[in-house]
Structures are given as C-alpha cells and as structure tokens.
Amino acid sequence: MPIIDAKPFHYDFSFDHVALVCIDMQRDFCQPGGFAESLGDNIKNLQPCIPVIGKLQEAFRKAELPIIHTKECHKPDLSDLPTAKRNRGNPKLKIGDKGPMGRILIDGEPGSDFIPECAPAQWELVISKPGKDTFYNTEFDDYMKLRKITHLVITGVTTEVCVQTTMRCANDRGYDCVLVEDGTDSYFPEFKAMTLKALVAQGGIVGWTCKSDALLELLAKEQPGQVSSATSFAA
Amino acid sequence: MPIIDAKPFHYDFSFDHVALVCIDMQRDFCQPGGFAESLGDNIKNLQPCIPVIGKLQEAFRKAELPIIHTKECHKPDLSDLPTAKRNRGNPKLKIGDKGPMGRILIDGEPGSDFIPECAPAQWELVISKPGKDTFYNTEFDDYMKLRKITHLVITGVTTEVCVQTTMRCANDRGYDCVLVEDGTDSYFPEFKAMTLKALVAQGGIVGWTCKSDALLELLAKEQPGQVSSATSFAA
Image 1: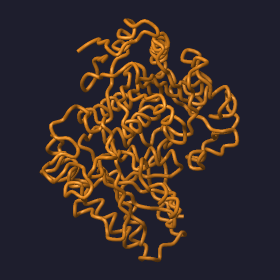
Image 2: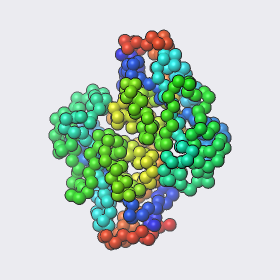
Image 3: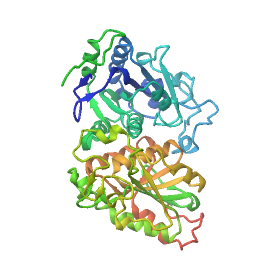
Image 4: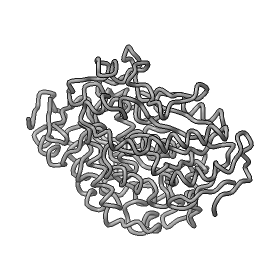
C-alpha cells in the first residue's frame, strides 16, 4: 500500500483505486483577459499551482493512472443555470453574455476551455459542471463507482470555492481525499490558507492535504503500466 | 418584498418562499459530556449562537413560517455510514460505538437529539442527514421544492463544516441563502470568521450573511399568520 506524508497524518491508497482530479483550470479563471480578471479578481494568485498541476498530470499519465478534469460551465441554452446564479448582484456581465473570450461560462466557448498547461489528454474524462460541487448534476460519482475509484488526489482552483466544495461532497460520499497544497490556489491567499487548515482539522474531518513532491517522488519510482499495490514511499 | 441589511449587499425575499434552517443543534456537538467534548473540541465556543437560534425559531414560529431542523446521524445498522467516515484516523470511539450519551451519532440515541434550547416543534420537519451537506441522501431538496421555498435563512453548527457545506450545495441548486452571523458558531473562531468572509466574497459567490437583529426586527412587525409580501424593513 503506497503511503505519503500528509496532514493531519499519513495518507495511504492503492494504485488500483486512485485518480487525479483537476478542478476548473479554465482560461476564464486563470488567464489575462478572461472573465475573472474582468471582474477584478487577481489572477496572479492562481499562477503558482499551474506548473504543479502540469507535473502531476504528466506523472499520473506516465503511470497510466486516471485523470479527471472538471470545468464550470453551462449549456448554451442556459437550461442548467439557476436564475439566482445568473442574477446575483445584478452584474454588468452575466453568465451567457458575450464576454472577452466568447459567451461567459458557456460550454464550448474559448473562455470555458482549459489552459494549455493543464489540458486533458484526448482519452481523459472531462466533467462539465453547472455548480461548485463536482457531484451536483454530473456523471462524476457514477464514473468513480464504475472505475472503483475510492481515493481522490485533488488539485485546481479556487481552493475555497469549487475545490473545497467538491472535496467536502466527496468526503460525504465516502471518498478518501487528499488536496495537494501547492496544486491549488485562490484569488485570496488568506482563504486558501484557512481552507487548508480547516479541511484537516478535527482529525481530518474532510480529508488530508499533502505536498506535490510527496506524490511526484512516489510516482517517479513507478514504471508506466507497472504500478504495484505493494509500493511504499514513506511511513 | 421584505429587505434586510446584509453582506455583501441587501438581501430580499418573500415570506411565501422563505424557511429557517437550523443545522445540527445536537447534544453530542453542543453539550458538556457529549461526543465532541470527548474528542477534545471546545464546546464553549458553540454556546453564543444557541440563544440567538432560539429567538429566531420563536420569531419564525410566531409568524407561521417554516423551520427545518437537521441532525447529523446514522441508521442503527450503520448502512448509511461510509467506511471512510467510520475509520478516519482510527479513533478510540467510532460512530456507532457506545459513547457518553448512547451510541455515537446514531439516530434515536440521546446524544444525537436536539438541545432543548433549539428543539423542533412537533410539526416541524427534521432531516436526519448522514453527511455534512444537508442535500446528500436526504429529502431536503424535494421538500423545499414541494413547498416552493427558494430562500434559506441558515443557522447552526459548525460554521465551516456542515453549515457552509449545506449553504454551498444550496447555492449550486439555485437557493438564495443568508447565513446568520451570530446564529452560527465553530469550535474554531478563526474558521468561523474566515468562512463568513469567504461566503460573501466575489459579489456574494455563495450568498449573504446578516445579523439576527435585522431578521428579528422585521419579523417583530409581522402578526402570526398575517405576514405579507409587501412588507419592507430597510432599504
């Protein structure tokens, strides 16, 4: 059973039942000229996690382990967009309106697409989700159960919004989740710091956090397609 | 349309479509000698919200508005308890074990029951929930839709765990939620403070927060059963 150093205590999992989850690494949230920047969010704060997620994706691919990518977006006819979400605060630019990178948060538009540094491989599952919680109104849970995945390595943006919401909902459903500390970011560093702390409080009430190095070193010792359940990295 | 002062901006709702939600005001979480205290959680930090929730319940009852109470607990046969939740951290006392107030977090046991200060009236809906998110594996969403409730006034414990998880999942489903700042508490005041801040960031990305006084003053002007959609309290 592979084991890595983590908070609040070591995290162990089986290579047969683990997946990397990359949450909302989309142009509109991460890139200059996107929707978030147009709203005044400081996208510089999201940049540090990008190369880390890129490295984790490379390592998981090399080890032939599953990667799931999510993107927050809505159907072009807005049928899955709650009125409350569209109108909150009566913004000048609403979801579905024409924005700097196509219609805002609409599936298939350039802005809702993944940044190239964290783009999915052709064979990897992409979940288009209408909410912050990846389980809500998506095929995520069915896919995980079908593939017998029980352990989620979570990365993405933003830490206190879609990332923690998904992790909390995964935890309710019995998944053992580890959030990669340097593989997630927020527009607000204080929210990221407190979220990391709250997730592992009370004996790991929501799960674990770890550093990407712990995972990368473990995976570097594996050969593609030859991962073994007997491998152990750290006690 | 009643309007109250709130963050990040005023909150409006209709008396026909609002409900008070009281999350997990259970003996095992709030009382001396309960499960939480046996785990080392500082239950003193949960006491301030108790009389506030009591007052809100009284006001909602007087105005004949719906109140929903949740409790985190599991079926006696543990069929709705994920193995990951039971075993996390290999605690000495596990869910389902005999604890200081009966079997821990089991529906019907004394510890899982409500504290008397915030107990439901006989006719009020009680949701027994196996997770932190009140929507997961419960009849909560169906009930709200049936009653045409679209606006949730949220209270309870703990702020960063069951309260925010429920509010985030309600927001995904299109509910407009306001969390009562002095009607919620955490064992960790720093988590409470940061959670209140994060929920209303980015233009109310998850919803609103308000003080109980704003709601109590509004409701004090209403007569039981004669609430009107035309009433306005503050601009």
